[in-house]
Amino acid sequence: MTESSKTKPVFRKVGKTQNLYRHAKSGTYYSLIKRSGKQFRRSLKTTDLQLAKNRLADLHRDISRLKNTEDAKLSFESIAMRWLQTKKNVNKPSSIVRRKSCIKNLDSFLGGRAINKIQPHHCEEWDAWRSPGVSAQTRNHELSTLKSVFNYAVDHGLILNNPASTLKRSRITQHEKLIPTREQFHEIIRVIRESDGRPDSQAKAKNGADFVEVLAYSGCRKKEASSILWRDVNFGGNQFLVTGGVTGTKNQRHRTVPMISQMRELLERIKPEDASPNDRIVPIDSAKKALETACRRLNYPRYTHHSFRHLFATQSIENGVDIPTVAKWMGHVDGGALLMKTYGHLRDEHSREMAGKVSF
Image (cartoon, rainbow, N blue to C red; front, side, top):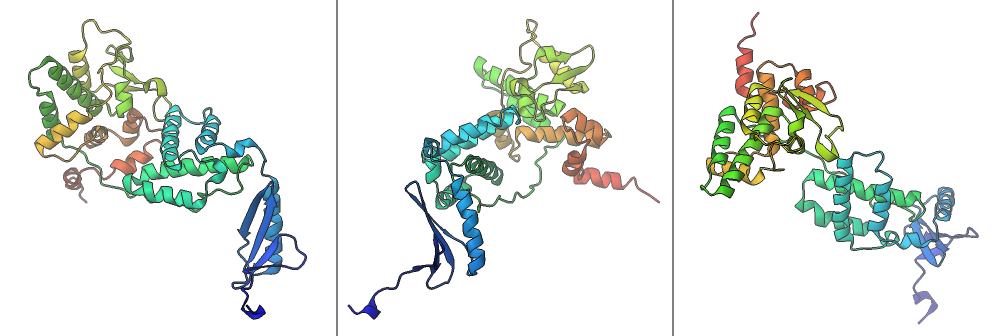
């Protein structure tokens, strides 16, 4: 083999500048740094020599921050739980629960990899695997958790860069809210209350219907409704207290809500004679199956628990209750700004009716 036929090196050392190399074909400068037996090669993303030297100096400083400890070899889950501990005093309990779930889902893909072994392509592979099967909101929650854990690892000198930094949040489109009419609501309650006559079926039917009625008459979120105890109900003051139970409400604030007549009638009807103050007004956490079955039988849209919170808001506003008051009842703390954005459109039929009242 002649000298001219030998393959030329892809990277060429640049003068006397330590750790600086230049790609023979593209002219782009690269760094090649060895530390604690590990080799770091990074593109400096420039063909300008002075800029390359400046970036190389920055890279040296970043690498010097890396700690040569066993912590860098810990799994993603281990570091994630350390990060989560730092959030317990600043995040709501419900947020901590959600973050734990995100960490569990993330680790099921990352498979116990050491935090310092996770590369950008692993994060991209996770995204390609996870995104098709979940909503944009769920993906965004998990991506936010992923990036936060890596940022924590960078800040503590366990890794050099965040390997998920190039992943972008999904855009969440606003879908039209599914809100049942009053007639649909009453039909759903009727169908849920039907049972095959067996005692266990009758109890499930009763509890399911009662739960959906509580949602519609209170405007509560599902977890808030399932946490109302009989001691929270004040028949004398015609009001009830919403605490959210152990994990609290969404904004961590208790609120007192006046009972509309249907809510009072329902509670008076369903309260057992031997009810304990610490008993829940409805002893279930969800009526999902009952709702799905009723909607299917009636050929209705697939209404959810939250649809009946929307129904409460819409009915209240359509019947003349001002938006700031409805917002207070429902636990919004922005004075009604979100409520106006969410429910300001109302129903087309009501909108046309209101337009008929306007004249000049």
